[in-house]
Image (cartoon, rainbow, N blue to C red; front, side):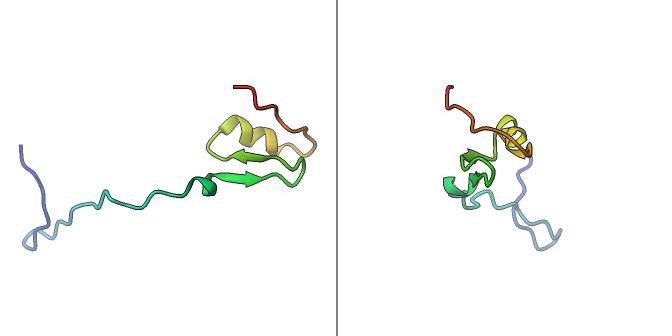
Length: 61
């Protein structure tokens, strides 16, 4: 197995895997229709809040 590292001869640069993690607050959005905050990573909630006239969701898991 060959491990790649930064190499001036080949021009290969390793990928930086230590990228900063987004704060948890950046994953939430406030819905202007119902006033509920929701997680943008949840597709079901995103689609629900995309409807023009909707009610807030219950928080039952």
